[in-house]
Structure formats: C-alpha cells, structure tokens
Amino acid sequence: MESITRRGFLAAATAATAGAAIADDTAAKEEVRDPFLGTQGEPLKVGAPCLQSPAETTMGVSWAVSGLSKGVVECADNPAMINARVQKSGGYGLLPIDTSALQVRLTGLKPATRYWYRTVTTPFTDYSNIYDAKLGEPVVSKIYSFSTLGSGARSHFCAINDTHARWKSYQLVAAKLKELAPAAVIWNGDATNTTQKKSTAVKIFLNPPIDDSDWAAELPTMFESGNHDFRGSWISRKEEVVLPRDPAERRSDQWDLKWNFAVRIGEIAAIGLDTGEDKPDGHPKWFGLANFSPYRKAQAEWLAEQFKRPEIAAAKFKVVFCHIPLFAAPGSAAYPHDGAVIDPEDFAHWSRECSELWGQTLENAGVRLVVCGHQHCYRFDPPSDGRNWAQVVGGGPDLNRKGRGPTVIEGFVDGSDKLRLRVHDLISGGLLLDTAV
Image (cartoon, rainbow, N blue to C red; front, top):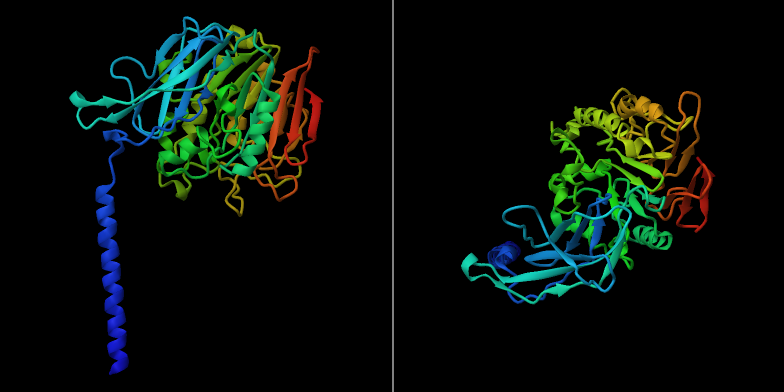
C-alpha cells in the first residue's frame, strides 16, 4: 500500500508541475509584446546593407532591423555625400515599415557609374495608435559605395552556390568574394535549407553570423533560386527579404519571373534562369503545390526574347546561370528531375525539361558558358559535339569530404578574345580550374 501511495504522490506531483509549467507558458505567451506596436524602449539594431538585383540604372538595397522601423537610402555621386538624394522604400501611397527587414530600390542611376550611399533607419518606439505614434532617434549607417552595371562596367563576375546556411563554409565564401571584388555576384541557388519563418531568411540573406557579414554592402548580388529555396511554409514570401528585379525590366505577364535577369556586366551578358525544384510537379512531397513545369516554359519564352535585345545580342560573351545542371555528368547515373527515372535517394542530378526547353536557344544565341550548382561537387564539362557551350558546376558546403567543399566561380575578360574562367577551391586555397572559354 505504501508503494502505491508513493507512486500516486509522485504522479500527482508530476501532473501539478506540468500543469504549472503549462500555465506559466500560457501566461508568457500572453505577455509577448506585439512587435508591430513599436520597439517600446528596446534599442534598435540595424544590419549592414545588402545590394540586390543590380541593373544599369537601378540598385536594390535591403537590410535587417530588430524592431518596427522605417528606412530611407541616401545616395550621391561623391564620397562626401554632397547633394545626396533621399530614396524612400516602396512605391506610391503608404510606404512599408517592418519589424525585421527594410528594402529600397534606387532608381534614375547612370550605367557603369560609381555611387556612394548610406541607410537611415528610424524606429517607431510606440505605434499602438497611428495618431499617437512616436519615433526614436535615426540610426545612420557608415558610407558604402557601389557601381551600376552596363556595357561600360568591369567585365568580372563571381558565382557562389549551395551555401545552405553552413556558416563556417559561408565565411570562406564571403572572404573570397571580398578579396576578388567582382562587379557583381551571382548567388546561384540553395542559400537556404527549409525556411519556416522570416527570421531564418533575414539571417541567411541579410545578417549572417560570420565575420564578413557586410560583404554584400559593396558587391551587388543577383539571386537565382535553387530547389531548397522553394522549401518551407514561409519561403513563398522571400521577396520580403530578397528584393526581386525591377518590374520595369519585363512585360506585365512576366512579372512572376521575379529574379530572372539579363544584364550586361561589361563585355559579358549575364542571364539568370530558375530551374525550380528537382522533383516532378506530381511528386507526393509537394501536396499539389508545385507548378514548376509551366514556370520553366514561361522562362523559355522570356529567354528567347532576351537574346533579341540589342545590348544582350551585342555582348561578346554570353553566360547563363541556373542552379540545376542542364545535363548529366559523363558516366554518371542520369537521374533527371522529370521522374522518368527516380534516384534511389530521391535526388535529381540534372534537369531534362530545362535542357529541352532552353538548350537550343542557348546554342542559337552563341552562349559560351552555363554556370550551375546543386550537386555539391565541382565539375567542368567542355563543349562537345552538338553543344558549343561549356558547363561548370560549383562545390558544396561540406568541409570534411574531399571534393565537396565550397568554391567561388570567377569569370573575367583579360583583354583577349576569350572569357577567363577560374574555380577557386576554398579549402585548399588553390584553383580547381583556370581556363579560357
């Protein structure tokens, strides 16, 4: 009887403790302050700005904040910021404010021109009522600079891929980018893993926990999604953190091609395509949410139009960027994304649909190079019969497996009639490839 009583006492005590914990947790949740009511005395933290979606006459600026704020960018054609122009966030009407990220698109810029800029972020200390809202002291960033793109820009790009929020690996990437200082960086997919909340995207794209977290403050970045950048319950809203291309760059019926780009980086025409997911739309893991096949077809039409633009057609070197390779490695198991053959690990190695939709257009346009990622392993495929363009695939974030480590793919024009291509191995510090294409 004593044993039973003891067990009953322990059970009752455990239940009481659990009940108290639930009550305390409920109370804590009820006491959580609504961030949209203002910072309420909490100091505002402001991240370094990140340059996004650069073009000839526009430049995007996004930055992280820790509380409800409004933001502007001051921009000038001189480092002293004399006669700086103030550009507000958003478009017409009510301008956006946010608790975690702010965005401004600078417009009316000149091609291939250097500018200096800084962000000015002002917190709302109290926004419990619009008529009684109160502002705190503005936080002014240091002065940074950037150069717009165009045919007169430096013919120099770097491409990164499959960073996957692996911070030790990402730090190596960021340091190499700052060292090489290209005219533009192409973030070629799989920046994320699975994104369930906005704060994860803010951390990855705007405020990474690395030493060189400000690398994108002076190196403009063009982003193309990888398959992981479509995974998670929040990720369909990534434009709140990664500023899309200027809608003026495309027809209204193509606005859903939010990050596709076709821009001149000096003598290089850089074209960005989105290969989408690496599984067929009917795959059970997508619960009917996937609609990538029509997306790829829409890009095929858009792609053909870009090569007809005089400034793109006239470029000496045409380079295409997309996350998933457009053909399988020689001798490898050819598992495409279209479901004809399924990899035992449920992983597609290449995109047959994209190859069929885009390949002939690339051939007809005289594309020299296609830059990919996805496979977490460097490889280079030179041109072959029936394919006049080379394909290079970047590495992955693994620091412990040979051949799977991070890379930076660099392309530049060195004064000859060739595009110089280098693949930097960030573990050894050497080059995996140094060739002309």
